[in-house]
Length: 561
Figure 1: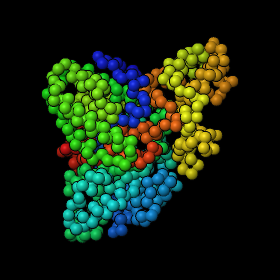
Figure 2: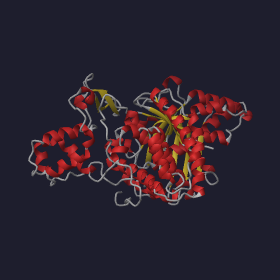
Figure 3: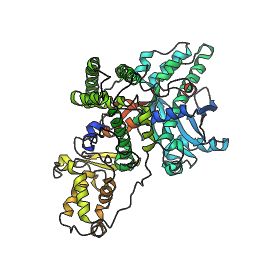
Figure 4: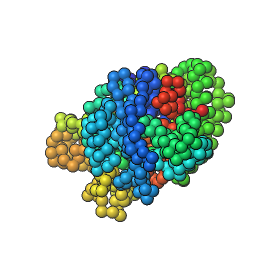
Protein backbone atom coordinates (compact mmCIF):
# COMPACT_ATOMS: atom_id res chain seq x y z
CA UNK A 1 0.00 0.00 0.00
CA UNK A 2 2.70 2.46 0.98
CA UNK A 3 4.59 1.72 -2.22
CA UNK A 4 1.47 2.18 -4.36
CA UNK A 5 0.41 5.50 -2.84
CA UNK A 6 3.64 7.44 -2.99
CA UNK A 7 3.50 11.03 -1.85
CA UNK A 8 3.09 12.83 -5.16
CA UNK A 9 1.13 15.92 -4.21
CA UNK A 10 2.12 19.43 -3.26
CA UNK A 11 -0.13 19.24 -0.20
CA UNK A 12 0.79 16.55 2.30
CA UNK A 13 -1.59 14.09 3.83
CA UNK A 14 -2.89 15.14 7.22
CA UNK A 15 -0.66 13.83 10.02
CA UNK A 16 -1.79 10.74 11.91
CA UNK A 17 -1.85 12.62 15.20
CA UNK A 18 -4.59 14.82 13.71
CA UNK A 19 -6.60 12.16 11.92
CA UNK A 20 -6.45 9.20 14.29
CA UNK A 21 -8.22 10.69 17.28
CA UNK A 22 -11.57 9.10 18.10
CA UNK A 23 -13.38 12.43 18.14
CA UNK A 24 -12.42 12.94 14.49
CA UNK A 25 -12.80 9.32 13.40
CA UNK A 26 -16.26 9.42 14.97
CA UNK A 27 -17.16 12.36 12.71
CA UNK A 28 -16.27 10.70 9.38
CA UNK A 29 -18.78 10.78 6.52
CA UNK A 30 -19.27 8.57 3.48
CA UNK A 31 -17.38 9.44 0.31
CA UNK A 32 -16.89 8.16 -3.24
CA UNK A 33 -14.33 5.72 -1.78
CA UNK A 34 -16.96 4.14 0.48
CA UNK A 35 -17.55 0.48 -0.26
CA UNK A 36 -21.23 0.77 -1.22
CA UNK A 37 -20.42 3.37 -3.84
CA UNK A 38 -17.43 1.39 -5.09
CA UNK A 39 -19.89 -1.46 -5.63
CA UNK A 40 -22.58 0.47 -7.52
CA UNK A 41 -19.92 2.17 -9.64
CA UNK A 42 -18.54 -1.23 -10.65
CA UNK A 43 -21.98 -2.74 -11.28
CA UNK A 44 -22.80 0.03 -13.72
CA UNK A 45 -19.42 0.34 -15.41
CA UNK A 46 -19.20 -3.41 -16.00
CA UNK A 47 -22.88 -3.69 -16.99
CA UNK A 48 -23.80 -6.40 -14.52
CA UNK A 49 -27.15 -8.07 -15.15
CA UNK A 50 -29.71 -9.16 -12.56
CA UNK A 51 -32.42 -11.81 -12.55
CA UNK A 52 -35.03 -12.99 -10.10
CA UNK A 53 -34.69 -16.77 -10.43
CA UNK A 54 -37.38 -17.62 -7.89
CA UNK A 55 -39.96 -15.87 -5.73
CA UNK A 56 -41.82 -18.58 -3.88
CA UNK A 57 -43.46 -16.60 -1.09
CA UNK A 58 -46.95 -17.65 0.01
CA UNK A 59 -49.88 -15.50 1.12
CA UNK A 60 -48.65 -15.41 4.73
CA UNK A 61 -45.27 -14.05 3.63
CA UNK A 62 -43.36 -17.31 4.12
CA UNK A 63 -41.03 -18.86 1.58
CA UNK A 64 -37.86 -18.08 -0.32
CA UNK A 65 -36.56 -16.08 -3.28
CA UNK A 66 -33.36 -16.13 -5.35
CA UNK A 67 -31.79 -13.07 -6.99
CA UNK A 68 -28.71 -13.49 -9.21
CA UNK A 69 -26.17 -10.80 -10.13
CA UNK A 70 -24.01 -11.68 -13.14
CA UNK A 71 -20.75 -9.89 -13.88
CA UNK A 72 -18.06 -10.24 -16.54
CA UNK A 73 -16.57 -13.41 -15.04
CA UNK A 74 -18.99 -14.98 -12.55
CA UNK A 75 -22.32 -14.64 -10.82
CA UNK A 76 -23.57 -14.45 -7.23
CA UNK A 77 -27.04 -15.26 -5.90
CA UNK A 78 -28.86 -13.93 -2.87
CA UNK A 79 -31.00 -16.69 -1.36
CA UNK A 80 -33.62 -14.98 0.82
CA UNK A 81 -35.93 -16.71 3.30
CA UNK A 82 -39.07 -14.99 4.63
CA UNK A 83 -40.64 -16.04 7.92
CA UNK A 84 -43.85 -15.39 9.83
CA UNK A 85 -42.37 -13.91 13.00
CA UNK A 86 -44.61 -13.00 15.97
CA UNK A 87 -44.08 -9.41 17.12
CA UNK A 88 -42.91 -10.45 20.58
CA UNK A 89 -39.94 -12.35 19.08
CA UNK A 90 -38.67 -9.45 16.97
CA UNK A 91 -35.45 -7.96 18.34
CA UNK A 92 -32.48 -5.93 17.08
CA UNK A 93 -30.18 -7.63 19.55
CA UNK A 94 -27.56 -10.10 18.42
CA UNK A 95 -28.90 -12.62 20.96
CA UNK A 96 -32.16 -12.93 18.99
CA UNK A 97 -32.93 -16.42 17.70
CA UNK A 98 -35.64 -15.68 15.11
CA UNK A 99 -35.97 -13.02 12.43
CA UNK A 100 -38.42 -11.80 9.80
CA UNK A 101 -35.98 -12.65 7.02
CA UNK A 102 -32.67 -14.51 6.71
CA UNK A 103 -30.19 -14.58 3.84
CA UNK A 104 -27.05 -15.98 2.33
CA UNK A 105 -25.02 -14.91 -0.71
CA UNK A 106 -24.33 -18.01 -2.80
CA UNK A 107 -21.27 -18.32 -5.03
CA UNK A 108 -22.97 -19.03 -8.37
CA UNK A 109 -26.59 -20.16 -8.90
CA UNK A 110 -27.99 -22.60 -6.31
CA UNK A 111 -29.70 -25.84 -7.29
CA UNK A 112 -32.86 -27.14 -5.61
CA UNK A 113 -30.61 -29.39 -3.52
CA UNK A 114 -28.61 -26.34 -2.41
CA UNK A 115 -31.78 -24.48 -1.49
CA UNK A 116 -33.06 -27.41 0.57
CA UNK A 117 -29.75 -27.49 2.46
CA UNK A 118 -29.79 -23.72 2.95
CA UNK A 119 -33.42 -23.76 4.09
CA UNK A 120 -32.41 -26.10 6.91
CA UNK A 121 -29.53 -23.89 8.06
CA UNK A 122 -29.76 -20.23 7.04
CA UNK A 123 -32.88 -19.44 9.12
CA UNK A 124 -31.00 -20.75 12.18
CA UNK A 125 -28.12 -18.30 11.59
CA UNK A 126 -25.43 -19.02 14.25
CA UNK A 127 -27.13 -22.27 15.19
CA UNK A 128 -26.92 -23.55 11.62
CA UNK A 129 -23.95 -24.16 9.37
CA UNK A 130 -23.19 -23.05 5.86
CA UNK A 131 -20.37 -24.08 3.52
CA UNK A 132 -17.65 -22.65 1.31
CA UNK A 133 -20.15 -22.02 -1.47
CA UNK A 134 -21.82 -19.39 0.73
CA UNK A 135 -20.07 -16.02 1.05
CA UNK A 136 -22.23 -14.24 3.63
CA UNK A 137 -24.87 -14.99 6.25
CA UNK A 138 -27.32 -12.30 7.33
CA UNK A 139 -30.74 -11.52 8.75
CA UNK A 140 -33.16 -8.58 8.95
CA UNK A 141 -36.29 -7.51 10.82
CA UNK A 142 -39.13 -5.26 9.77
CA UNK A 143 -39.55 -1.71 10.87
CA UNK A 144 -43.02 -2.74 12.04
CA UNK A 145 -45.02 0.49 11.86
CA UNK A 146 -43.62 1.61 8.51
CA UNK A 147 -44.00 -1.89 7.05
CA UNK A 148 -47.67 -1.97 8.06
CA UNK A 149 -48.25 1.54 6.72
CA UNK A 150 -46.71 0.72 3.35
CA UNK A 151 -48.57 -2.59 2.99
CA UNK A 152 -51.90 -1.02 3.98
CA UNK A 153 -51.42 1.96 1.66
CA UNK A 154 -50.40 -0.06 -1.38
CA UNK A 155 -53.22 -2.55 -0.74
CA UNK A 156 -55.72 0.33 -0.92
CA UNK A 157 -54.21 1.54 -4.18
CA UNK A 158 -52.45 4.64 -2.77
CA UNK A 159 -48.84 5.50 -2.18
CA UNK A 160 -47.48 5.64 1.40
CA UNK A 161 -46.98 8.97 3.10
CA UNK A 162 -43.58 10.38 2.14
CA UNK A 163 -43.15 11.99 5.56
CA UNK A 164 -43.46 8.60 7.24
CA UNK A 165 -41.05 7.12 4.72
CA UNK A 166 -38.52 9.88 5.41
CA UNK A 167 -38.87 9.59 9.18
CA UNK A 168 -37.61 5.98 9.12
CA UNK A 169 -35.87 5.52 5.80
CA UNK A 170 -36.07 1.72 5.58
CA UNK A 171 -38.58 -1.14 5.69
CA UNK A 172 -36.15 -3.64 7.21
CA UNK A 173 -32.91 -3.42 9.12
CA UNK A 174 -30.20 -6.03 9.33
CA UNK A 175 -28.66 -7.02 12.63
CA UNK A 176 -25.65 -8.78 11.11
CA UNK A 177 -24.03 -9.47 7.75
CA UNK A 178 -21.40 -12.10 8.46
CA UNK A 179 -18.66 -13.10 6.02
CA UNK A 180 -15.00 -14.08 5.83
CA UNK A 181 -15.38 -17.67 7.00
CA UNK A 182 -17.77 -17.16 9.89
CA UNK A 183 -20.10 -20.12 10.59
CA UNK A 184 -18.53 -22.10 7.75
CA UNK A 185 -18.81 -19.46 5.01
CA UNK A 186 -16.03 -19.11 2.43
CA UNK A 187 -12.75 -17.78 3.78
CA UNK A 188 -11.76 -14.34 2.58
CA UNK A 189 -8.60 -15.61 0.88
CA UNK A 190 -10.65 -17.92 -1.35
CA UNK A 191 -12.19 -14.91 -3.15
CA UNK A 192 -9.72 -12.09 -2.41
CA UNK A 193 -8.05 -12.24 -5.83
CA UNK A 194 -11.30 -11.96 -7.77
CA UNK A 195 -11.36 -8.56 -9.43
CA UNK A 196 -14.80 -7.70 -8.03
CA UNK A 197 -13.73 -8.69 -4.51
CA UNK A 198 -10.40 -6.86 -4.21
CA UNK A 199 -11.95 -3.80 -2.62
CA UNK A 200 -13.01 -4.52 0.98
CA UNK A 201 -16.45 -5.87 1.92
CA UNK A 202 -17.76 -6.12 -1.64
CA UNK A 203 -19.65 -9.40 -1.14
CA UNK A 204 -21.21 -8.03 2.04
CA UNK A 205 -22.26 -4.85 0.22
CA UNK A 206 -23.66 -6.87 -2.68
CA UNK A 207 -25.66 -8.91 -0.16
CA UNK A 208 -27.26 -5.78 1.30
CA UNK A 209 -27.89 -4.31 -2.15
CA UNK A 210 -29.81 -7.42 -3.20
CA UNK A 211 -31.58 -7.65 0.18
CA UNK A 212 -32.97 -4.16 -0.49
CA UNK A 213 -34.43 -5.37 -3.79
CA UNK A 214 -36.00 -8.41 -2.14
CA UNK A 215 -37.53 -6.27 0.64
CA UNK A 216 -39.15 -3.97 -1.93
CA UNK A 217 -40.55 -6.97 -3.81
CA UNK A 218 -41.75 -8.61 -0.60
CA UNK A 219 -43.67 -5.58 0.65
CA UNK A 220 -45.33 -5.23 -2.76
CA UNK A 221 -46.21 -8.93 -2.70
CA UNK A 222 -47.82 -8.63 0.74
CA UNK A 223 -49.79 -5.57 -0.42
CA UNK A 224 -51.02 -7.49 -3.47
CA UNK A 225 -52.06 -10.41 -1.24
CA UNK A 226 -54.04 -8.03 0.97
CA UNK A 227 -55.52 -5.75 -1.67
CA UNK A 228 -55.80 -7.94 -4.71
CA UNK A 229 -56.59 -6.04 -7.88
CA UNK A 230 -56.93 -2.79 -5.94
CA UNK A 231 -53.27 -2.85 -4.90
CA UNK A 232 -50.50 -0.88 -6.56
CA UNK A 233 -46.72 -1.06 -6.54
CA UNK A 234 -44.46 1.47 -4.89
CA UNK A 235 -43.79 4.61 -6.86
CA UNK A 236 -40.19 4.19 -8.11
CA UNK A 237 -39.05 7.46 -6.50
CA UNK A 238 -40.48 6.44 -3.11
CA UNK A 239 -38.97 2.96 -3.42
CA UNK A 240 -35.61 4.50 -4.28
CA UNK A 241 -35.65 6.67 -1.16
CA UNK A 242 -35.84 3.54 0.98
CA UNK A 243 -32.58 1.93 2.09
CA UNK A 244 -31.81 -0.98 4.35
CA UNK A 245 -31.41 -0.20 8.02
CA UNK A 246 -28.70 -1.72 10.14
CA UNK A 247 -28.22 -2.10 13.86
CA UNK A 248 -24.54 -2.34 14.76
CA UNK A 249 -23.15 -2.90 18.23
CA UNK A 250 -19.86 -3.55 19.96
CA UNK A 251 -19.13 -6.60 17.82
CA UNK A 252 -17.83 -4.27 15.12
CA UNK A 253 -15.67 -2.02 17.31
CA UNK A 254 -12.63 -4.29 17.84
CA UNK A 255 -12.31 -4.89 14.08
CA UNK A 256 -10.32 -1.72 13.43
CA UNK A 257 -8.05 -2.51 16.38
CA UNK A 258 -7.48 -6.08 15.25
CA UNK A 259 -6.79 -5.20 11.60
CA UNK A 260 -4.27 -2.32 11.71
CA UNK A 261 -2.95 -2.94 8.18
CA UNK A 262 -6.41 -2.92 6.64
CA UNK A 263 -7.52 0.09 8.68
CA UNK A 264 -4.35 1.94 7.72
CA UNK A 265 -5.05 1.34 4.04
CA UNK A 266 -8.56 2.75 4.31
CA UNK A 267 -7.27 5.92 5.96
CA UNK A 268 -4.29 6.29 3.62
CA UNK A 269 -6.54 6.02 0.56
CA UNK A 270 -8.92 8.67 1.87
CA UNK A 271 -6.16 10.99 3.06
CA UNK A 272 -4.21 10.67 -0.18
CA UNK A 273 -7.37 11.36 -2.17
CA UNK A 274 -7.96 14.50 -0.11
CA UNK A 275 -4.33 15.58 -0.54
CA UNK A 276 -4.55 15.08 -4.31
CA UNK A 277 -7.64 17.27 -4.55
CA UNK A 278 -6.21 19.96 -2.27
CA UNK A 279 -3.24 20.06 -4.68
CA UNK A 280 -5.40 20.79 -7.74
CA UNK A 281 -4.26 24.19 -8.98
CA UNK A 282 -7.18 25.09 -11.25
CA UNK A 283 -10.73 23.85 -10.69
CA UNK A 284 -12.79 23.59 -13.85
CA UNK A 285 -16.27 25.05 -14.19
CA UNK A 286 -17.69 21.52 -14.29
CA UNK A 287 -15.90 20.50 -11.08
CA UNK A 288 -16.99 23.67 -9.28
CA UNK A 289 -20.60 23.25 -10.39
CA UNK A 290 -20.67 19.61 -9.26
CA UNK A 291 -19.22 20.49 -5.85
CA UNK A 292 -21.81 23.22 -5.30
CA UNK A 293 -24.64 20.98 -6.51
CA UNK A 294 -23.66 18.13 -4.19
CA UNK A 295 -23.23 20.54 -1.28
CA UNK A 296 -26.78 21.83 -1.77
CA UNK A 297 -28.17 18.30 -2.10
CA UNK A 298 -26.33 17.12 1.02
CA UNK A 299 -27.46 20.13 3.04
CA UNK A 300 -31.09 19.35 2.21
CA UNK A 301 -30.57 15.68 3.01
CA UNK A 302 -29.28 16.56 6.47
CA UNK A 303 -32.79 17.73 7.38
CA UNK A 304 -33.81 14.06 7.49
CA UNK A 305 -30.96 13.09 9.84
CA UNK A 306 -32.70 12.52 13.17
CA UNK A 307 -31.66 10.94 16.44
CA UNK A 308 -32.72 10.78 20.08
CA UNK A 309 -29.09 10.58 21.20
CA UNK A 310 -28.26 13.90 22.86
CA UNK A 311 -24.59 13.99 21.89
CA UNK A 312 -25.25 13.13 18.25
CA UNK A 313 -28.14 15.59 18.07
CA UNK A 314 -25.82 18.31 19.33
CA UNK A 315 -23.35 17.41 16.58
CA UNK A 316 -26.13 17.52 13.98
CA UNK A 317 -27.32 20.92 15.20
CA UNK A 318 -23.77 22.26 14.99
CA UNK A 319 -23.40 20.73 11.54
CA UNK A 320 -26.50 22.56 10.30
CA UNK A 321 -25.08 25.84 11.60
CA UNK A 322 -21.66 25.17 10.13
CA UNK A 323 -23.07 24.30 6.70
CA UNK A 324 -24.93 27.59 6.69
CA UNK A 325 -21.62 29.32 7.46
CA UNK A 326 -19.99 27.41 4.62
CA UNK A 327 -22.76 28.36 2.19
CA UNK A 328 -22.27 32.00 3.14
CA UNK A 329 -18.50 31.66 2.70
CA UNK A 330 -19.00 30.26 -0.81
CA UNK A 331 -20.70 33.50 -1.89
CA UNK A 332 -17.49 35.44 -1.29
CA UNK A 333 -15.01 32.75 -2.38
CA UNK A 334 -13.49 33.04 -5.84
CA UNK A 335 -13.61 29.43 -6.98
CA UNK A 336 -11.37 30.26 -9.96
CA UNK A 337 -8.42 31.22 -7.78
CA UNK A 338 -5.42 28.90 -7.61
CA UNK A 339 -5.70 25.96 -5.19
CA UNK A 340 -9.24 26.91 -4.22
CA UNK A 341 -9.96 23.50 -2.68
CA UNK A 342 -7.03 23.86 -0.31
CA UNK A 343 -8.23 27.34 0.60
CA UNK A 344 -11.68 25.97 1.34
CA UNK A 345 -10.31 23.06 3.33
CA UNK A 346 -8.09 25.30 5.48
CA UNK A 347 -10.99 27.70 6.07
CA UNK A 348 -13.14 24.78 7.25
CA UNK A 349 -10.39 23.60 9.60
CA UNK A 350 -10.19 27.04 11.17
CA UNK A 351 -13.89 27.90 11.31
CA UNK A 352 -15.96 24.72 11.57
CA UNK A 353 -16.45 21.91 14.06
CA UNK A 354 -15.17 18.37 13.42
CA UNK A 355 -18.46 17.09 11.99
CA UNK A 356 -18.49 19.78 9.29
CA UNK A 357 -14.74 19.56 8.70
CA UNK A 358 -15.03 15.89 7.83
CA UNK A 359 -18.14 16.51 5.75
CA UNK A 360 -16.20 19.07 3.67
CA UNK A 361 -13.23 16.68 3.43
CA UNK A 362 -15.45 13.96 1.94
CA UNK A 363 -17.25 16.37 -0.37
CA UNK A 364 -14.04 17.82 -1.81
CA UNK A 365 -13.07 14.57 -3.49
CA UNK A 366 -16.47 14.04 -5.14
CA UNK A 367 -15.77 15.89 -8.43
CA UNK A 368 -12.44 14.11 -8.93
CA UNK A 369 -13.14 10.49 -9.74
CA UNK A 370 -10.36 10.52 -12.34
CA UNK A 371 -7.88 11.37 -9.59
CA UNK A 372 -9.10 9.29 -6.67
CA UNK A 373 -11.22 6.31 -7.73
CA UNK A 374 -8.14 4.18 -8.30
CA UNK A 375 -7.35 4.36 -4.61
CA UNK A 376 -10.34 2.10 -3.93
CA UNK A 377 -8.30 -0.77 -5.34
CA UNK A 378 -5.60 -0.11 -2.72
CA UNK A 379 -7.88 -0.34 0.31
CA UNK A 380 -7.64 -4.10 0.80
CA UNK A 381 -4.79 -5.85 2.58
CA UNK A 382 -2.98 -9.13 2.06
CA UNK A 383 -1.15 -8.78 5.37
CA UNK A 384 -1.75 -11.64 7.81
CA UNK A 385 -3.86 -10.76 10.82
CA UNK A 386 -1.16 -12.34 13.02
CA UNK A 387 2.23 -11.19 11.72
CA UNK A 388 5.51 -12.98 12.39
CA UNK A 389 7.56 -11.41 15.16
CA UNK A 390 11.03 -10.26 14.11
CA UNK A 391 13.00 -11.97 16.83
CA UNK A 392 16.39 -10.63 15.68
CA UNK A 393 15.41 -7.00 16.26
CA UNK A 394 17.44 -5.42 19.08
CA UNK A 395 15.59 -3.98 22.05
CA UNK A 396 17.18 -0.60 21.32
CA UNK A 397 15.29 -0.46 18.00
CA UNK A 398 12.11 -1.72 19.63
CA UNK A 399 12.35 1.05 22.23
CA UNK A 400 12.74 3.67 19.50
CA UNK A 401 9.69 2.33 17.67
CA UNK A 402 7.65 2.26 20.85
CA UNK A 403 8.61 5.83 21.74
CA UNK A 404 7.75 7.17 18.29
CA UNK A 405 4.47 5.28 17.91
CA UNK A 406 3.03 5.96 21.34
CA UNK A 407 4.36 9.42 22.17
CA UNK A 408 0.74 10.60 21.99
CA UNK A 409 -0.05 8.47 25.08
CA UNK A 410 2.71 9.85 27.31
CA UNK A 411 0.27 12.09 29.18
CA UNK A 412 -1.99 9.22 30.29
CA UNK A 413 -1.76 8.26 33.96
CA UNK A 414 -2.21 4.50 33.83
CA UNK A 415 -2.29 4.18 37.61
CA UNK A 416 -5.60 6.02 37.81
CA UNK A 417 -8.86 4.08 37.69
CA UNK A 418 -10.36 6.50 35.17
CA UNK A 419 -7.71 5.53 32.60
CA UNK A 420 -8.37 1.79 32.95
CA UNK A 421 -12.06 1.84 33.86
CA UNK A 422 -13.18 -0.43 31.02
CA UNK A 423 -12.20 -3.91 29.84
CA UNK A 424 -13.02 -5.65 26.56
CA UNK A 425 -14.07 -9.29 26.77
CA UNK A 426 -16.02 -11.87 24.75
CA UNK A 427 -19.48 -12.92 25.92
CA UNK A 428 -19.92 -16.61 26.65
CA UNK A 429 -23.48 -16.67 25.30
CA UNK A 430 -22.90 -15.25 21.81
CA UNK A 431 -19.10 -15.12 21.52
CA UNK A 432 -19.44 -11.40 20.75
CA UNK A 433 -17.16 -8.57 21.99
CA UNK A 434 -18.41 -6.73 25.04
CA UNK A 435 -17.17 -3.77 27.09
CA UNK A 436 -17.45 -4.00 30.86
CA UNK A 437 -16.58 -1.95 33.92
CA UNK A 438 -13.26 -3.26 35.21
CA UNK A 439 -13.75 -2.24 38.83
CA UNK A 440 -17.40 -3.24 39.07
CA UNK A 441 -17.45 -6.64 37.35
CA UNK A 442 -15.18 -9.73 37.68
CA UNK A 443 -14.13 -9.57 34.01
CA UNK A 444 -10.42 -8.73 34.12
CA UNK A 445 -9.27 -12.38 33.82
CA UNK A 446 -11.13 -12.53 30.50
CA UNK A 447 -9.83 -9.25 29.09
CA UNK A 448 -9.01 -9.11 25.38
CA UNK A 449 -5.83 -7.34 24.15
CA UNK A 450 -7.69 -4.27 22.90
CA UNK A 451 -5.86 -1.59 24.88
CA UNK A 452 -2.71 -1.01 22.80
CA UNK A 453 -1.63 2.17 24.54
CA UNK A 454 -1.92 0.64 28.02
CA UNK A 455 -0.03 -2.47 26.89
CA UNK A 456 2.67 -0.33 25.27
CA UNK A 457 3.13 1.53 28.56
CA UNK A 458 3.54 -1.78 30.40
CA UNK A 459 6.14 -2.91 27.87
CA UNK A 460 8.01 0.38 28.13
CA UNK A 461 8.22 0.01 31.90
CA UNK A 462 9.62 -3.52 31.49
CA UNK A 463 12.16 -2.39 28.89
CA UNK A 464 13.56 0.15 31.30
CA UNK A 465 15.20 -2.77 33.10
CA UNK A 466 16.27 -4.69 30.00
CA UNK A 467 19.58 -4.73 28.13
CA UNK A 468 19.16 -2.70 24.93
CA UNK A 469 21.63 -4.95 23.13
CA UNK A 470 19.42 -7.97 23.82
CA UNK A 471 17.32 -9.36 20.97
CA UNK A 472 13.54 -9.36 20.94
CA UNK A 473 13.61 -13.17 20.86
CA UNK A 474 15.70 -13.36 24.03
CA UNK A 475 13.46 -10.82 25.76
CA UNK A 476 10.25 -12.65 24.86
CA UNK A 477 11.62 -15.97 26.09
CA UNK A 478 11.73 -14.35 29.51
CA UNK A 479 8.55 -12.24 29.10
CA UNK A 480 6.13 -13.99 26.71
CA UNK A 481 3.22 -11.90 28.00
CA UNK A 482 4.47 -9.05 25.78
CA UNK A 483 4.37 -10.97 22.50
CA UNK A 484 1.18 -9.36 21.23
CA UNK A 485 2.45 -5.86 22.03
CA UNK A 486 5.84 -6.42 20.39
CA UNK A 487 4.12 -7.84 17.31
CA UNK A 488 1.87 -4.80 17.09
CA UNK A 489 4.73 -2.33 17.43
CA UNK A 490 6.71 -4.06 14.71
CA UNK A 491 3.66 -4.19 12.45
CA UNK A 492 2.85 -0.50 12.91
CA UNK A 493 6.33 0.51 11.73
CA UNK A 494 5.03 0.68 8.15
CA UNK A 495 1.44 1.70 9.00
CA UNK A 496 1.29 5.43 9.82
CA UNK A 497 -2.51 5.36 10.20
CA UNK A 498 -2.84 1.91 11.72
CA UNK A 499 -3.41 2.91 15.33
CA UNK A 500 -6.21 4.82 17.02
CA UNK A 501 -4.42 7.48 19.04
CA UNK A 502 -6.73 7.38 22.03
CA UNK A 503 -7.21 5.32 25.17
CA UNK A 504 -9.62 2.51 24.29
CA UNK A 505 -10.34 1.53 27.91
CA UNK A 506 -10.87 4.93 29.54
CA UNK A 507 -14.03 5.82 31.43
CA UNK A 508 -14.97 8.45 28.82
CA UNK A 509 -14.52 6.15 25.81
CA UNK A 510 -17.36 6.42 23.27
CA UNK A 511 -17.34 3.11 21.36
CA UNK A 512 -19.81 4.54 18.85
CA UNK A 513 -16.92 6.63 17.48
CA UNK A 514 -15.24 3.40 16.41
CA UNK A 515 -18.49 2.07 14.95
CA UNK A 516 -19.17 5.23 12.98
CA UNK A 517 -15.66 5.35 11.56
CA UNK A 518 -15.96 1.87 10.11
CA UNK A 519 -19.54 2.40 8.94
CA UNK A 520 -18.58 5.61 7.13
CA UNK A 521 -16.19 3.56 5.01
CA UNK A 522 -19.09 1.24 4.26
CA UNK A 523 -20.99 4.29 3.01
CA UNK A 524 -23.58 4.58 5.78
CA UNK A 525 -25.53 7.78 6.39
CA UNK A 526 -27.88 9.14 9.06
CA UNK A 527 -26.03 7.66 12.06
CA UNK A 528 -28.48 7.25 14.93
CA UNK A 529 -26.76 6.12 18.16
CA UNK A 530 -29.11 4.31 20.50
CA UNK A 531 -26.54 4.43 23.31
CA UNK A 532 -22.77 4.85 23.50
CA UNK A 533 -22.45 1.21 22.35
CA UNK A 534 -24.75 0.66 19.37
CA UNK A 535 -25.99 2.65 16.43
CA UNK A 536 -28.61 2.45 13.71
CA UNK A 537 -27.77 3.49 10.17
CA UNK A 538 -29.20 3.39 6.65
CA UNK A 539 -27.52 1.67 3.69
CA UNK A 540 -28.17 2.18 -0.04
CA UNK A 541 -30.85 4.81 0.56
CA UNK A 542 -31.59 6.55 -2.79
CA UNK A 543 -29.39 4.09 -4.70
CA UNK A 544 -30.76 2.85 -8.03
CA UNK A 545 -32.29 -0.61 -8.01
CA UNK A 546 -30.73 -3.27 -10.28
CA UNK A 547 -33.17 -2.65 -13.12
CA UNK A 548 -32.40 1.09 -12.95
CA UNK A 549 -28.61 0.91 -13.04
CA UNK A 550 -28.26 1.25 -16.80
CA UNK A 551 -30.09 4.59 -16.93
CA UNK A 552 -29.79 6.01 -13.40
CA UNK A 553 -26.97 7.76 -11.55
CA UNK A 554 -24.92 5.05 -9.86
CA UNK A 555 -22.37 7.50 -8.45
CA UNK A 556 -23.92 10.37 -6.50
CA UNK A 557 -27.02 8.67 -5.07
CA UNK A 558 -25.76 9.40 -1.54
CA UNK A 559 -26.70 13.02 -2.25
CA UNK A 560 -30.39 12.71 -3.21
CA UNK A 561 -31.96 15.17 -5.59
